[in-house]
Image (cartoon, rainbow, N blue to C red):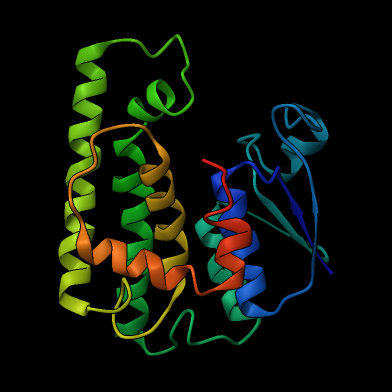
Length: 207
């Protein structure tokens, strides 16, 4: 039985839970993080020195970093539809996963706490505006990609790229800001809604 440490309100925990369900892997989840069991303990830091969630425990093997966990889960389940074994097809999926983690997520580092979380420490109008601009720039990149594929983020089939990007786009859609028209993203998002695991862990009312 896989053990996933991390609260379900975490966007990164939810992508791991979604992947488990898509891959048909049994798991148990324990709430760790703000408001739940502390990650700031020696015991937790022994699992993840960053003191962040999620953490995956599979027997004696411990793994942190959500996208790495998603890749591991797909391979463990032998789901080459989620993460292809063909080198170039795999690289294409991983490109969009890495872009999600490095570019897309960094774009909302200031705007989301300000607008989505209403954190009073994030109150600089110029930085909020700059964050929205960068966030929407990333959305435009994904919109162009989906206009090309007319299907899923990495091509004709659903993959891990759609899992990680689905959570990020859900956050963008739920954050109160002026959203540009994105018909290709909207059509893709509607396709995600046909997946029960997305409704449980992606678009489930949580930012």
